[in-house]
Image 1 (cartoon, rainbow, N blue to C red):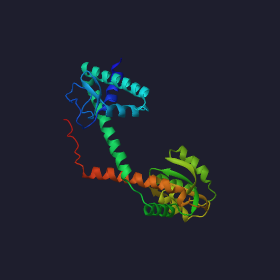
Image 2 (cartoon, helix red, strand yellow):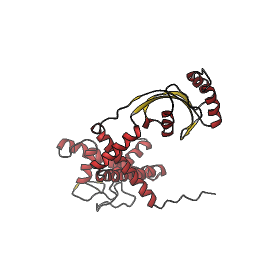
Image 3 (cartoon, rainbow, N blue to C red):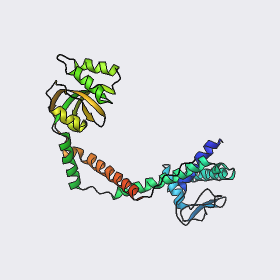
Image 4 (cartoon, one colour):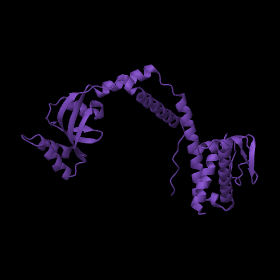
Length: 279
C-alpha cells in the first residue's frame, strides 16, 4: 500500500482517538490509540484496547448499528483493520513524517472544534421577540419597492467621472455607454435587474430613489465596491414575505450570528502572537 494511503488510515485512526479519558492505552508514541475512552473491552489488538464506546462511535460514524450483530461485526472488522494499519504506520516510520503528523494534529483539532460548535449551537436560544425584531429590521432595510438598475463600476473616480459625462449627454444611450466602457476595462458594466432596496449597496439604493425612471445619476457614486455610474430603469411596489414565511430562515440567521459572535469573543480574549520571522 502506498504511503499516502497509509497516511489516510493514520488520519482516520486519529478520529477514533479520545482527547481525554482513562483508557488503558498510553499515549507514548508507540500506540495508535492515544487516551481512548474508558469502558468494557471488546478486543485487544497488539496490546491496544478497543472499548465499547470506541466501537459504537466508529460504527455509527459509518452508518452501522452496533446493536445489530452483523453490522456490529462489520464495524469491528473494519475498526481492527484500521487500527492494524495505523500501528503499521507507526512501526514503519510513516507516522513520524511531518506531513502525517500535521494531518493527525489537524484532524483532532477540527473534530474538537466541530464538537464545541455543535454544543454551542444547541445552547443558542432564539426567542420570539428576537425573531420579530430581526424581521422588522429586515423589512425596514428592504423597503416597500423594487428598483431596476444598470451600472458601470470603476476602480477610480476619474474614469467614473468621464463615463458619467458621456452617459448624461443629451440623447446618450446608457447601454451603449456600458458596452464602450466594458471594452475599456471597467470593473463591471451590466444590468443589475430588479432588486429590493436591501439587495443593493445602501448608498446606491438611496441615490437611486432620488432619480426618475430612465434617469442617470449626474455624478459617480462611491460604495465599498468602487465608483458607480448608474441608471434607474424603473421602480415597482415590493411586498416583503410574511413573518411566518421567513421565521425559520430568521432563526438560522440569528443562530449563525451568535456563533460568529462566539468566535469573535474567543479571538478577542485569546493571546495570539505572530512568530518572529526568520533572518
